[in-house]
Image (cartoon, rainbow, N blue to C red):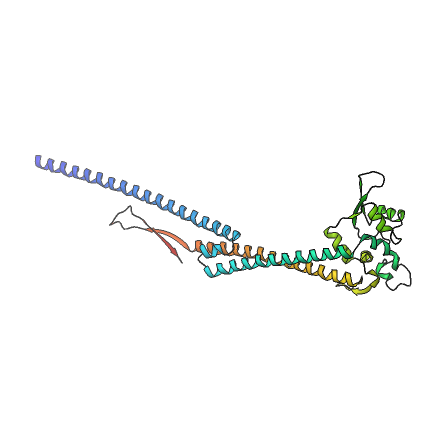
Length: 316
């Protein structure tokens, strides 16, 4: 009986001990699974952050230098070289056409300063007013047919010394009533009076971009050219007749070259911007595709070490 009781106690003890070890093992197993899940989650978040950071880096790199993201990040070296080559060619072209435009602009301005004058314009403005003058229509209102007064249309700006206040300057624009008053008061239509007025009152034209554009484009300022007596009729790009002369024609040729180069410069800059934008979009798309095809998983071998996990990155 005693032996039987002893055997029962030993059996129960063995069961209890065995169950304790079992639960300990289960507890250890649960902790291991939780640790692995946490580690795996952390690694997934880390990889996701890296993927996101790579996209931002790729876009910023392409914004600064097109092709850099393709070459260094997305491993598309040929495409990167093409984008970078377009960038270099674009800036080289931009500098070339900018220099050409500036050179022609300065040449035109120098030529205009030598061959167009305020005094000549005032002296000869009404030379074509006679009804029998074959060029009268070029200086007349299209609807009424009346000869346009000198203070109509576009306006040039100039300063001259105030005759009443010493040290003071008066600003005048030629398409105003104020200029008409000055024109009539000093009889600027009489030969030599405009030049005397300009010298006496230290007249200075405001030689802005608009000034140089208007004297070569609009007929109302034609008589300012020193060869205005060699007037000819020409047709512009819009089919309108214009008054021209050898000096004005030459000046217009230089002016047009400057404008043409400025327009090409603008188109080149648009191409540079487009190259940046396309490179940025391409870098973002390619880096996104790489990220979307990237899968993260883990595997383990319980026979070696249950806590050991292997991260596997698959590029499909």
